[in-house]
Length: 290
View (cartoon, rainbow, N blue to C red):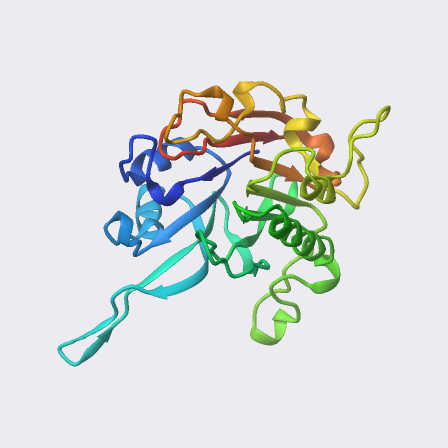
């Protein structure tokens, strides 16, 4: 099973062009795709609908979109009818097999006085895979404040670990006429976490490396796929380029991750960053499980 995560930066690449087609080409072929910074009616990109464009470019994928917020950007009345125009910003999951349930988990935020601060979230999607039923989370954390990221990680971790008890998107579904969805323990957290390895928020999520035994593999912590496979160091494993100076390697950072539940740690086969992708200031992270 091949999975990929990609922060698509509103569809705007390193060359400053809006082009959803090259984003679709960069992720085509994965079994499960997680995208962040997907927008509808973005004034900065000509009010395009990235969800519709991605669905059209990847017609053989099932998909869900989780907007973290709506903001009016020109709703009006035309010929006596209300016409809505809302800017939406959020995450997306696409899958080769049907998405059984999904829900949007909104994460804590604090009002900013200077600088942009958006409502962030994690889109949860329950999917049947060759490895069984797995929960996938397309995740996007705050980009400015370590304290805010820490609060977001704490809430996200609690929701992920409490899933079997909480019941996910729905329980008691037979009352509505369809089968009860499974409630698996296995999960994959993937996306733009905007944090560096070794920070407090990182260690809350996946633990501190032991001096002798390395990364803990317990039900309390998620497993960093790249660290598990020894692919977390070096420029080839950085996932963000400064769009103002993309050639400056000193500015490259690893802030996009694929974390898996301990139950899937032994299934990890490979991880790589697609260094050829130019559709965003981030680069796709591919992981293979088997």
